[in-house]
Length: 330
Image (cartoon, rainbow, N blue to C red):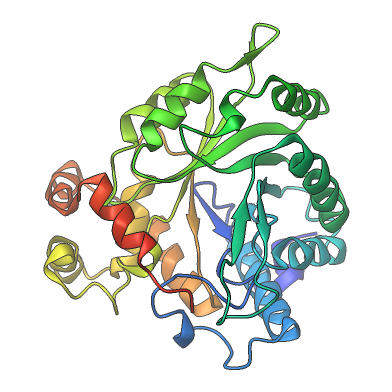
């Protein structure tokens, strides 16, 4: 099926450097700043399903060929699976998902003690891999342990490693996503995990943006080892969007946006895509209009001088993650 037959509009060439994440559209509550301005006022399951399908239509029509989801993104896997079932000839797509968090909010945005609960156990893997496959209609091409930190049993549990190696033997690329101030330590620990003398993990999805670049050296090592590297949160959960980039912490980005005429969102994504170790950078757009703005990054060539200029935005990792943890779910 051509992209044009999905959207009704002519499609450009495939966009290989950018993907679409569904964290913001698969559930009613999330932590992106200003999200309430981008979503339907009534966030019913049907309204969010329709929004997610529109986003997938728009992304495919624009040439995006990587869709990212997770067990904990509310009903995102369900919505993506429905879209895939309705577009069986879209065989050029790569679909990634994640396991290890259980969604616990019950489709509520308030009065929730925890929106998701993390557990990297064999029991959770056994349950969630089946759920993922049933909802997507097939195994994902890429299956990641969700939000691994250095203390996660995903790095040390031999029984879990055997399960993951079995999945890899079926043709699924097995990896991990990272979070927290020691993403670099997590990636390096994962690089050393082997099963029967072979590396277990061959992909990673990490937070990288001009405010939080600390994982870059480890991600470069992973890329050099043949891993597929996906960048998430390139806009820092909305902190680098035009409407939110108003404080002194983003002054350099605003100055560059004003000088070049690009949106802050597109610049942030383009800067991430300019990293030589980054294979795909995710847009976390919550509306087709936001996605279109994000994808203008495909036409931005960031110079070395501009990259040096934006290096002034970097925060200590501990500071960045403390700010992220304080963002409200809304």
